[in-house]
Length: 455
Image (cartoon, rainbow, N blue to C red):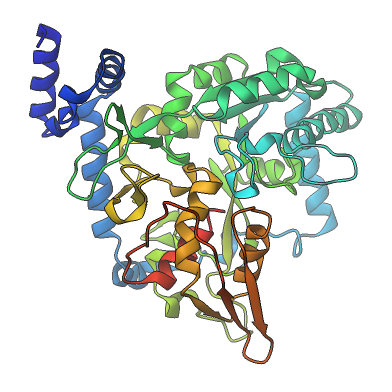
């Protein structure tokens, strides 16, 4: 063993991660270099600390705790287009357009996801949503920025520019940059379009062990929307915003085809309210509520079904503000979070199945923390096929949608039986691809429901 390997093993022992070298003797020189590079890139002090914080957060946020603390948002702190007057909306819009004309608005697009749920392997933003124009999500949103710049010029008599910051991932960055360049940024100036990558974190088992994706490769997953703040700092994006004198930032996800990019009414309302952080929501069942004088998004799994279904006397849901990843930030708010409070962010745990070898499939899978949708759609279908053949769903039209997708795959022979009276769906006669093992799981119905969300 070389001196560098001695140091590497000592580093791993310090953080109880020496198992990462358990296949070392079986590896080729090329694979050894790959694994050594993966380990060297890990900041073990930071990542193991993240793991501990994530576990502590998940243990602290129990159903009973949030049920006891959660309260609806004070109506005085909420504005709605439905209840605002025409005069109020006009005032908000004029303020927002003035901010655009002064070149003080940026759009922060979260576009790190691949289109696996849509059945494609390229970035979601490049997806053709089947409009008559055949425009992609990237094109639609870029053209909305252009149109807003024109509106601001007509309103204020001067032309401002919106800077478009695009958060990508390892899986989408190169394709996104090449796509936008190939299409000349859809009319936007190249200097006003900046793509930057979100970070990656290693995946852990439940007992804190980093997982190997292969014998020579560490399993990693994107660090989620919360990793945005670190990426803003690490890639100099926050400094760029300050240099451009940007004040108002509209952040949203790429897969919202209806998003009003840099909505001047939303921005104007936040400016007039002198708020550091604004959230646009829709009236639905998912909660976004105040906890002990702090506003936060509450996951559906963090409160009981009874709490989520509470209604006012008028029949409206008590917790009816559904987070749609549509936010307003001031630059001062972002600076405060990035430089002083990033370490205080609450971490959410995602428990997923991470197979050691997907071709051998499911029985030997390790349970760990990873976004399951990172697997290809065919790999996920392998997992679901056997599971679906033994399931019956009641009151779930979702299953019919899932099956309709399966019919497009050549190795599935599906017969869908629909009983309209009982609203029961049953899948029969699924031919399992060769090499797929039986999935062993106690709660197959729950697992199936969760996994199908990743299609």
